[in-house]
Image (cartoon, rainbow, N blue to C red; front, top):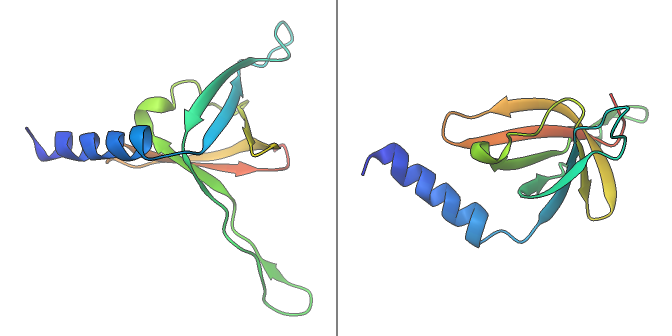
Length: 110
């Protein structure tokens, strides 16, 4: 077994067996199918905190989800994610070569 395969097996174990957060991913939203198609993803949610830099400035990082690269087949710029009752929209994708992808999301449709 190669090191890459061992890493992918470890990722599978974490995401498939140990993860409890389920995210509803809606995709394929078109005029013909305005409600899209739903699938459930297993992912980690990263909600960085906001902090005040001064009286008028707030530093804020985008929330993101971290999931297996093999599970992102249907995710594109029209994707919507429902997490704990809140709808988020696709903002950006950052692929990692080790089998994990981070999808930045936003509560505002971009």
